[in-house]
Amino acid sequence: MSTSLSSPSDTARADAVLALIGNTPMVPLRFDPEGLTLWAKCEFLNPSGSIKDRLAKTILVDARQRGLLRPDTIILECTSGNTGIALSMVGAAMGCHVTILMSSSASEERRLLIRRLGAELVLFDSAGRYQTGIEMSREMAAKDARYFLPRQFENPLNVEDHEHGTGQEILRQVQGPIDAFVTGFGTGGTLAGCGKAIKHRWPQARIVAMEPAEQALLAGECPCCHCIEGVADGFVPALLRDAPLDGEVKVRSADALAMTRRLHREFGLLVGTSSGANVVAALQVCRELGPDARVVTLLCDRAERYFSTSLFADAVSGR
Ligand SMILES: Cc1ncc(COP(=O)(O)O)c(C=O)c1O
Image 1 (spheres, rainbow, N blue to C red):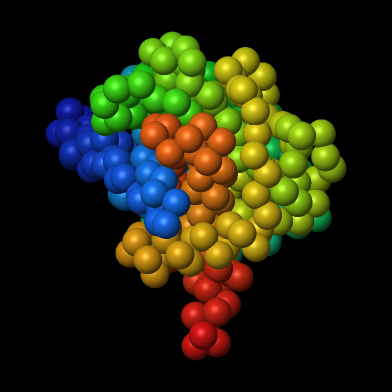
Image 2 (cartoon, rainbow, N blue to C red; image 1 turned 135 degrees about the vertical axis):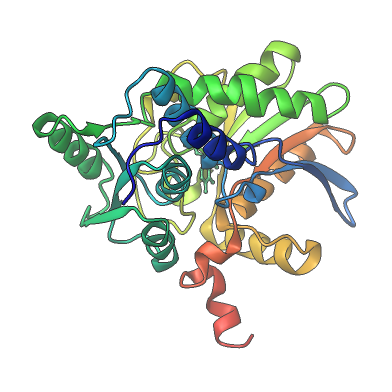
């Protein structure tokens, strides 16, 4: 593995790749016969395939600027997949060592991508407890000074990046008032950051969390199994504490899967299951607010990441 980049030309080479991150397009999605239109931001078009590229770039560039990335530094993070792929991608571009802790339940595609990007992958058996991996990363970092922890669940840069980046892009792309912003949460960074930016510009806008119905934590229910990978890891994240939330919409896994397949077949958008879930929740909010409401949501990651999951079970059996 190469050492951390430090010369100006190496930095320029890395930055040329990192410039591909963000500034994703916004697509209007029209749903007939209801005649409802949602505004969907195409985060799946980020270079490693998800919204998490933004966080990875912001945290690692900040660390580089503060001189925290030495040649022997190892970036260490526990993730359910997309952050791991994003950190591995940004780490590859910057020439950094990356180790990813991931639950053994994460899809095979995610593991392959992380390894292909040159990162080390450590799988843990969480038995449904994501905190296990977070505690593991803290223990490893306490014993070895080479580890640098991005700490996506508590790093304020996570929220700030979405407030000043993604959120501002949304405000530029959607002309006129926004009536609602609807998305799921993992760390809560996207919901809190974009929510703050949108609420600041359009105070009447409703900021709504999408939650898997089988694990509606904000609605006060207990953790349980759901099929919407990337969101609701079994606890309410700290970054959501000061988010300007107006409510939540529960989405059943079956409805999320059906809508995601509809986005594939009827819109030609190859997105992952949480995107379908976000669209189900956003449509519900749009119905409540009326046909002229401007409701914004996110298409968070790519379908190719889910070939081995229930999302593609129907395609594999030829249906
Ligand atoms: C697949 C996926 N990744 C990431 C996110 C956003 O996560 P976070 O709350 O960590 O910003 C979402 C949110 O819906 C998601 O669906």
